[in-house]
Amino acid sequence: MSYTPSENRYNDMRYNRCGKSGLLLPAISLGLWHNFGSVDGT
Image (cartoon, rainbow, N blue to C red; front, top):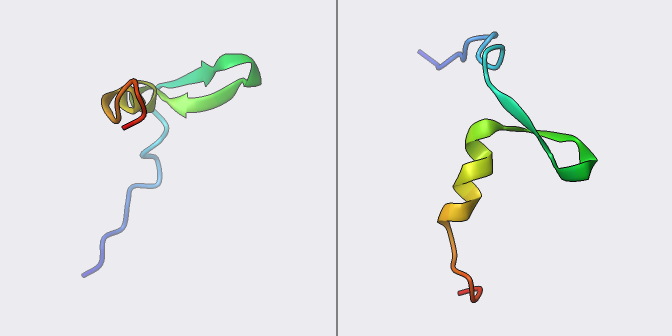
């Protein structure tokens, strides 16, 4: 048996526009990038 994702899995997802480009990103991704790495790049 193989996994088949729901066809409407993105219909209710919240998206936010990113900067002046207007790129639409899922709301959860906007917060996750802050959790990795450090200020000095290490």
